[in-house]
Image 1: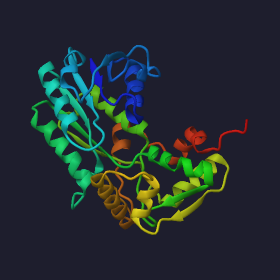
Image 2 (image 1 turned 180 degrees about the vertical axis):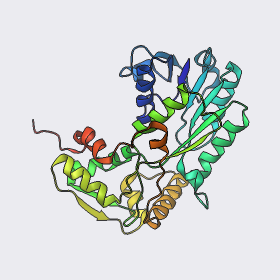
Image 3 (image 1 turned 60 degrees about the vertical axis):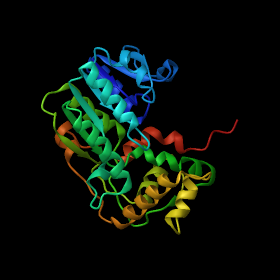
Length: 287
């Protein structure tokens, strides 16, 4: 039995579908059953909360493998999940980390994920660590201003990165969970197209058939205010500002061929992702 945390998110949804298609036994951890309504019916539902360790015992009972995704800041969720996994006799963890862990020097976001990785490595359960770069779904943060005002605020200018479709991350996770040979491995995952924000916006514009203006943010702080108009926690604000600065400085765009090597196909393109998600960027039809 494979237990999937974060099953209702961008990666988790795709992973549950991948595992279901492979015929694997899947259990999903959710706070409320209603949140899993769109997921395959064959997947077991287990109600529990990583904030409440006492709720995890039954969810982890009989589990052989764990997909561990713990968003946000802090290590408590990771520690609670690992403790429950160890008590249940789980034999393999596939842990979602971040490409920021390999930064030199390591940025704040990398340090958060590194601390979680250390908890996983120290628990004694064989693990596979996935370190993806920026998700294609991050472009959905631009959807409100595209729909309402036809522009995107660009905080990184000439900076490039190789966004990855969460479905490709899920496909790698499913491989690691269902095939031998991945324990003890660390995989850095990216797309294979290095793009600026302007280039991404052009691809979105082509997908929706509408011109979109790119406005360069004067400072990272301006971009942060646009993303969090009501403000962000200071620790998170500082980390995002740092990330924008580092992304602006990378005018090449770090890429790996790991997805292609593991899946024996090229990663999905941003244009393909946009074609499947174009409606998110379109103005609602007039009633």
